[in-house]
Image (cartoon, rainbow, N blue to C red; front, side, top):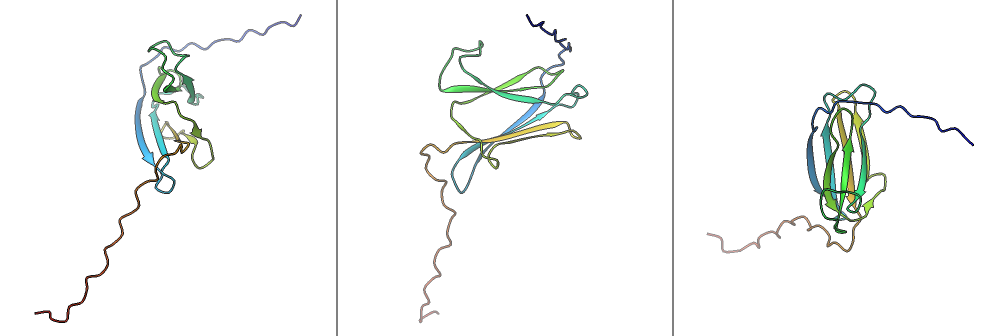
Length: 140
């Protein structure tokens, strides 16, 4: 019978929630809705890289489960894990629509994703300049 390896758990004292900024976006060409998350971790533990994951409404125990919602979680020690309630729609995971980036110098974690377009109306067209005014022969 194989012997199980014991994994040592790291222990950190939680220092509170990180700062964050969430920006709603819409692709002008496709009309896709997108979210950009910027999470600030100024006192992140050395060698730790922030992580994110999506949690279904049925995994969480804070609110009543609702299939219309899911939760996007961000975690990095020694900070508390933070979560955002987002619509339960499929994400467009193409390279230009879904990305994340950890900036070691500024200690900011960025994550952006777009929802797949599900019969959404296209974004409003850009305003077109009106036609030139007609030339009148009797200008006074």
